[in-house]
Image (cartoon, rainbow, N blue to C red; front, side):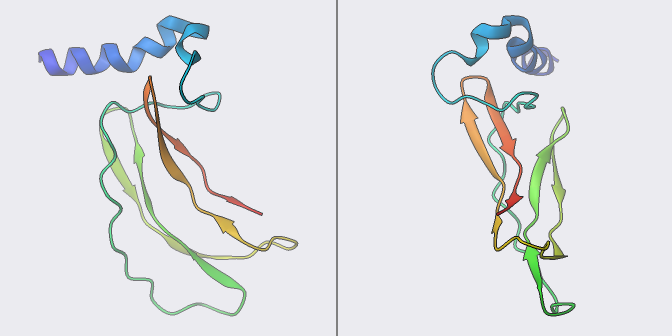
Length: 106
């Protein structure tokens, strides 16, 4: 019970501190959702065969749902026109906790 209350207070702290929450350290993107605990190591996934030429594997990752980490499995995706490579998402740490930076095409 106490652990649950403490976790809620820690998760709510950035909202209560407002602009002061981002002072110093890493700066999280606007609207970032923070997790208290370090994310688990990524799972080892079986990719299967590439569906067709021009597709690449986008690895899965853990996401925070406010109570715990849930696994979003990887998948094959077609390379968008004009893009050359996928920059994978990653978990970063700041004073507020852990937050996810989405992957993107370049």
